Length: 477
Image 1 (cartoon, rainbow, N blue to C red):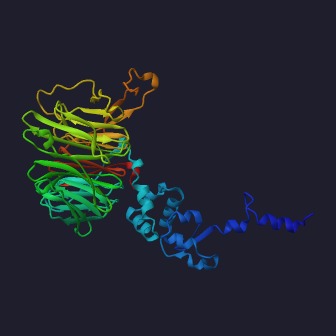
Image 2: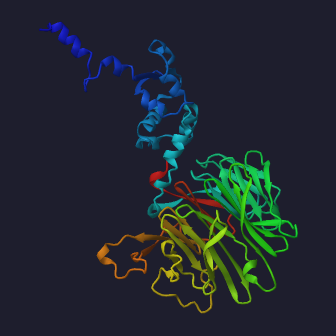
Image 3: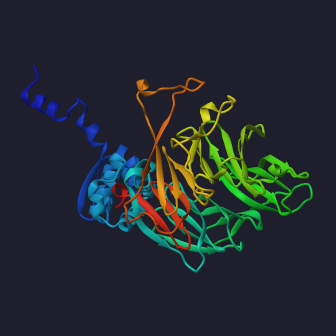
């Protein structure tokens, strides 16, 4: 029978769960930050990444505990340690200046974790979004096009300049480009962008720190004429550029490797012969649809019959159009595709109505636009949708109308509530409209562009030399 002293010693070497205390203690790391002691596990500190100061500290031998002293602010460290433990900032982080948190996260080498926590697109609450600030631009030129990064960084083209804001919208820089004006802009990374113009040849990949042109991409038709850029798009590994020859007698979409910028293939090549005006319409909007591995390309043209256009879904691998619709009656003023909602959305130039076409029913020879209202409005010949913009973000679609923005969301109905089914057995779909923002935020000058990045929406308005930032109050520090 063991003695009492032996039993006490055995109990002292065990912790809850029956694990040896020495083994558990070796997993605990004690860190002194600014005179305040913190304890965490090696697994938690490893989440900081291999290049972090915290990972280095967790690898120290217990005999080197004196080296685990960091002469930094302990209160800020407490916030960042909570970020490591849960993946989210605690509520008390709102009492700290974001610039201080960014500075500390940079010191510890965990800024990417802070960026993900504060700029996660899942934090975008479309029903509680409101205007939070204005981003002022240098110079006198009005913004012509904006491009947002996945974590909420923003690039703004105004005149021959590009002004960039980092993900926190607190760091701002402006570069001068070779373009007299910029019409197409795509954020490739936080430090580079693709830019093009409709009256200046070539697509340029521009470094946003010093304004250096890293590469110029061109396309030549059979007559070797120069080409201008009509639209830019991208997938995870491909860069898409819509080119039109300077003589406006041919156009195509070039596909490049996004990382090497080497040409991969050419699709949608059209040459104009005689009066075949449809082939003269270059694509002015490019959107990649990941779920079906197709590229949506759309373009329109004002001619004698009025506004005409086409929307095509291209199989980049085969170079063939998988689906196409020609727009004549109520041709789109703007069009977009929502991968999340599996649908193409347009706003008609004549009626101003928002309509959709389900991607799951395309190709059944019965597809048609479904108007999201019960009937078309009588407009007396007025073009209600002229200048409207439509974009998708997450599970919602946003349509600008004058100085306001409509929010369209799909309503999930009970199976018994559906009164009809499509030919493919798909249930009918119901969308509802809401107006976003506070009453004081609505109206004003006409909206000229919409962009989304992370948990933010960006808006430019006619004759306004600034960019509006919209976000939900719950996601702001």
